[in-house]
Length: 513
Image 1 (cartoon, rainbow, N blue to C red):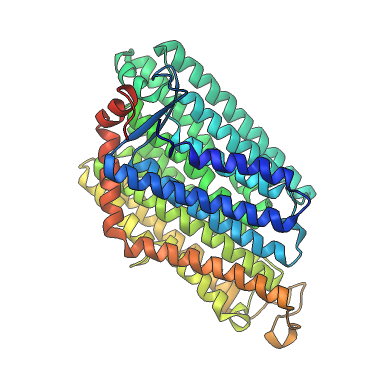
Image 2: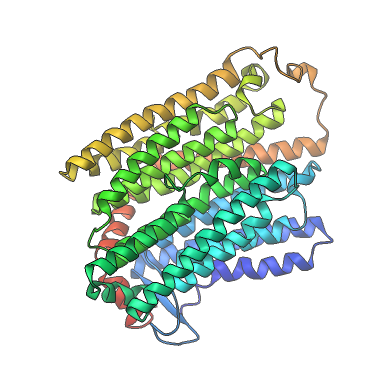
């Protein structure tokens, strides 16, 4: 049995239990949680090294052979997602620790740490699951934790948003479980490697129906238009650090599951034209929604929806180039979207406002915060030479190389969506940082001379928060600097997705080192 594969979800799951026992000591909670998150990062890096050396690796829990036992499997896509996700989880956890040090109760409740670690376990299990049932379990562990996190420091608005989120999530989970049951009824297995051979023998109508059901399930969880309405109303209501991790990982985990199921189980492309249309609609609706908002968190939530369309576009091409572009875009967007929400939290702390009509003059208060926002905003917009430009260029090249008229049209929509993203980010920049603070503001203008000097503890907290944000920005820049190796890795991962032989052999023919 490969002992590395269970570690990314077993460590945080055990850590969640330990932090429940240590709830009386905030210092121990923080130290234990950060140490466990760092351990998860180390384990995912070890898995990536193993996958790079040996190819697809798998293990069977309890030594029950596939397809009967519980299978954990990691290929290049899984390894990349594990490394990036665990690093972002660690960074946002440290950010939350920094916020809690200043005594803000919103990040400090003892339930935060066990819930956060449980969410981390769910995300990692979803990436590693080699069968549909454990994929479902991974999503449920993640979602149950998110139910707790989204309603931390409850307010009426937060509870209302939390109820919407819970109802939508439960509905999609019921549909997910129904889809798993129907798949088992049609094929007699839920093991993904085994399913990849059995779905080929299904009647075309049954196969298409199952492919559509998986598309709807992960379309709801991933906020693909028109199944996205829950996201802009629920994410912005949560604590900003929680919104950051939700925006970075929850929807991306759904996109990962969509990529995994569509390429492994339904490579006959029955749904690719539909996905191309959904990709275009998602880009346009998301970005037009962003331009109509005044709340920065809602603007970022709508851009999150819009940019899910880019990921669906790459998948819908069903080519090595398209999938490689989608994988590169996943990495870029996880980092950049989380960074933008962290910067918006800093803006809110410095100004006391998050609505654009009340913001202004922040450049005079903190040019450093202005720079913190500018870099990820330009990356999200796809301005060269940022990581967003590299990822979008890869998708556009794949779209134009497909030789299909519909793909050309969606590529044109992607260019338009990028311009709309630039407009949305420029609007935030201009109104929040450049213009004078409007008179309608309920709070007086901020100026460094007007603000009393921070205490030593507050300086430490602010330093930690800004340090984490700078590290996240550097992470995003590293994606651009390392675009060559990342593109090569993504290309190999895409090849693995379309050529399913190694995945099948690793799971069905026994463990590898």
